[in-house]
Amino acid sequence: MVRRVAVFEPGHLTKRQKRDLRREIARAEDNEPPPKTHRRDRALPEAAVPGPFGPGLTEGGYWNLAQPNIPAHQATSRQIAGIYPFVADAGLGHRGPIVGVDLNADALWHFSPWEAYADSTDRGTFSTNLLVLGAYRAGKSATVKTLVTRSLAFGHQAVVPSDPKGEWVTVAEAVPGGVVIRIGGGSAARLNPLDRGPRRTDADDEQDEKMVRQRRITTLVSLIEMALGSTRLTAVEHAAIHEALERSIRVTADHPTLRSVYEQLGTIVEDAGTDFRLAEGAVQPRFVLRRFADGDLSGLFEDESTVAFDADAPIVVVDTSELFSRSELVAQLTQVCTTAWIQAVVSDRSAKRTRYLIREEGWRDMTSLAALQMFQQWLKLSRHYGISNIVILHKMGDLDAVGDADSKERNLAYSIVGDIENKFIFRVNHQEAAALRERLNIPATHVEDARRLRMGVFLAYVGQYAYAVDCFATSTAWEYELFATDSALQQDEGGEILHVFDTAELDRFWPDDSPIDTSLDGWLSPTWKETPQ
Image 1 (tube, one colour):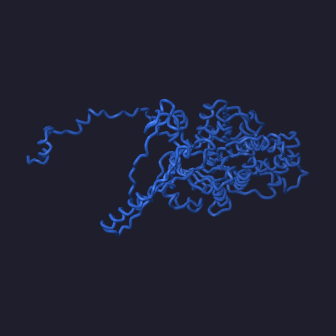
Image 2 (cartoon, rainbow, N blue to C red):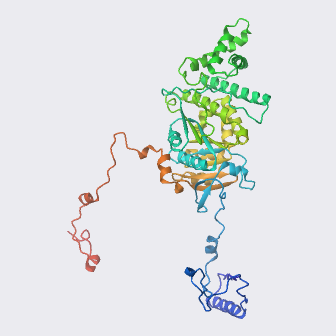
Image 3 (cartoon, one colour):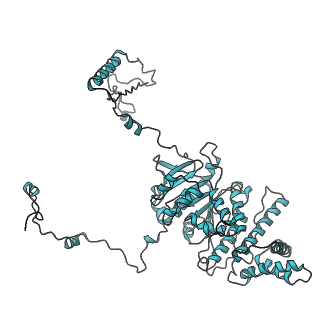
């Protein structure tokens, strides 16, 4: 065992006192005999050749060197505090895929929401959901794609219910076995948001029927309220929708569609035997669903599904980029329909699968009270179904589009986002400083750091710990090219290529008529500008 001695000198000593102190320390060290240790006590093999050196490493042995004489390190207490060995964080361990480099520990940073949830230490979390927030061109999309694609090797799957920009389509096409479902734009594919979905083996008939019916009615109410804007459905209108859904289930042998519900609402209005109040309540929902049956949203969600969800595919992407160019309302309705169709398939706990559910433009899932309640319920049940919801926002101000100021809808939206325990915060604008502190309870010093982050660097909040991670530090050339979505990397509209300035032309813009003298006298003599003309 090697003995280490640390000597602290008071700062007020004179030179003579310091010299006397050092002599006394050296005398004490000389008088203390060194401990006698044998080679067998140190578990070292005996030298094959006697002497100061043994056989070299090239011969499969070791170097039998003498004890090195290293002088003691001298430093002030302030310098010693700077080299304190425990300033680097231990990180989350090595479970899960590599997401980037931990800038505080200078080590690889691994992250998996399921591994973090299964961690029983103080670094564990109580949720598998993830909030990703940051300004444009901060690296959010590329980081999420890095996390998802690298997680495929760990057996996790990924589902994008709505891809408004078509960015995930290229990823799904590059991954072997990836599936892309295109909606709109001349495609004949249809998705029925009222699909029953697979039977849950761990639920009895009554439980399964109750869950399916609840999801169907919630989807219907969300679509109708979203199309009506700020108008809330009355109790009579709710009753009319319930009645129309029940009739549609009976008529279609448990295969209801938006078209069949629309027709049953018309039957309730025209049926003389129906309660006149129920008939009045069916009028407004019927006009809303007419848009899906015969209006501008027809051919997408009104009939039974023509495509099936591939449960074994590593990644499934629903391409809705053609529909998002119509209007904002069409984009919101489309996202509700596709999300409801996906949830009917993936909400099967007995399948023993773990999936990422990427919600691009996540605020569109929270545009009405019914949609908010459905979104909140889905986040709470994510652990039950083995799902990790990745909610992507550009800023907290995106939620200002939900309801009016101080309304129940907006407060619920902020509450839902604030309850997501795992967060990736990228570079934000200075307008977001107050919202991050108040809504997400992020320390003020971290908010200031978030304003200065470069592209690809984010602050990761996992449980009770925070990390500074650089994702692009581990990106391969294949990933960087596949995940790049920055339009600045492309040519401009004129198709012109950026020309590099010819360095030989610089002399034409920087004339210098001074004589060149490289001798010593030339260096010491005044320049031509300093010489009087």
